[in-house]
Structure formats: structure tokens, C-alpha cells
Length: 103
Image (cartoon, rainbow, N blue to C red; front, side):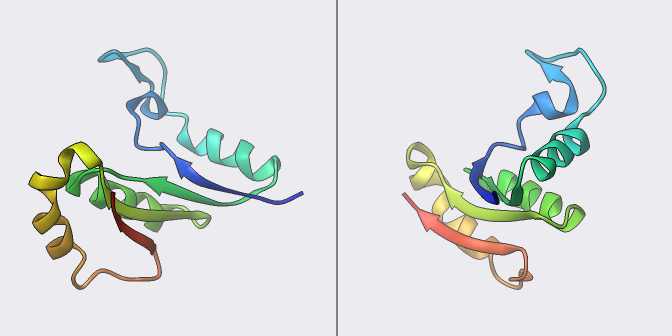
């Protein structure tokens, strides 16, 4: 069976081996993505809630074939992020951006 993960939180520091600000193991994001592929995940959409997370998600999508960035803003941050996020979408390669949303 083939799957699409539409809300992967791959920007979480735990994929870099960091838990509660302590480094506990080496980064394992590549292993996690490989395991997802073996399990049938053909696409993974990285969720972002801030402008910086949107940039990080886009960079992650550029590094991994099956990863796509989903640019949005969290409801609690809406008033502070909205203008920045809209501006940051200009001139972005749309091959990696699959969604833009405001909650």
C-alpha cells in the first residue's frame, strides 16, 4: 500500500537527536525517511507554523525527494506572522511548495 503523510513534524529537534535541549544521539532524519519509504510513504508533507519553520521546511524539501513543504501559520501566531509569511512566499520555487494556508 502507498501512503502520504500530510502533517509530518520533521522540523522537531528530536530528528537531530536533541531532546529537552540535550543531545542524546546523532541525527536520524535520513533513517526515519528511509523507514517511511519502506513502509509505503511516497510523499511526506512537512508542516510549518512560523516564517522560519517555513524556510526550514523548504530547505528540507530541497534536500529530500519525497518531502514537500507546506507553508502556513499557527492560529496563535497569526497576527504577528501573517505579513511576513505572505512576503516570504514571493519568488519561491513552487515545485517544493504544495500548500499555503492561514488558520
